[in-house]
Length: 190
Image (tube, rainbow, N blue to C red; front, side, top):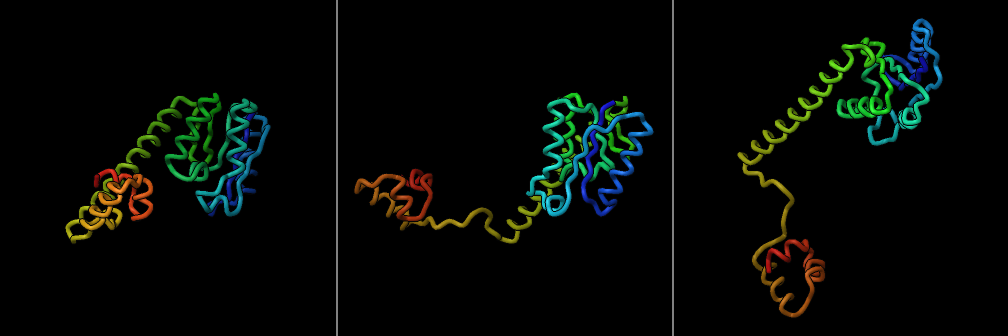
C-alpha cells in the first residue's frame, strides 16, 4: 500500500522520532512510503498560522498519490477536535485512510469508522459544553447588573438629531457617518 507520513513538532515526541517510528511501522506492514509531510516551529504553536505540511498533504491526497496517511498521535493532527474530524472526513472523501499509530486507530479496519463517530460526538459535546458555559456566564453577569452587548451612544437627543438631518434631506449613510451611529440605527430611528 502506498502511504504518506505526517509529523508535527510535539512536546510528546520530536518529529524526527515520530518519523523513525512510522517508517519502521510501514516497513513491518509491507507498505511503501511515497511522501513525508512535516510541520515545525511557530506554525505548530499558533492555530492561526497555516500548517504548510498539512496543507500539502491534503492537496496530494486529492490527487490520490497515496491511499493511507500515517500519523504518530491523534493529538498532532489538526488544532482542535473539530479540525480533526474535518480533516479525516476530507481524507475519506478522497478515499484515503488514516492510521493513528499511538492510539491504534485505523479507519480501514471495521472499528475505525465507529471510533471516528465517537470523536465526532465528542466534538459536538465540546461545542455544547462551551455554549452552556457562555450562557451561564452571561446569566451571572446579568444577575450582577452588567449590561451585555456593545455600548450604545443612542439617546433621545441622537434620535432627534437623526430626524432633523433626515428632514433636511441628508441620506441615511451620511447621517450615520456624521452622528457616528450605524445605518440600521438611523433606519430604526426614522
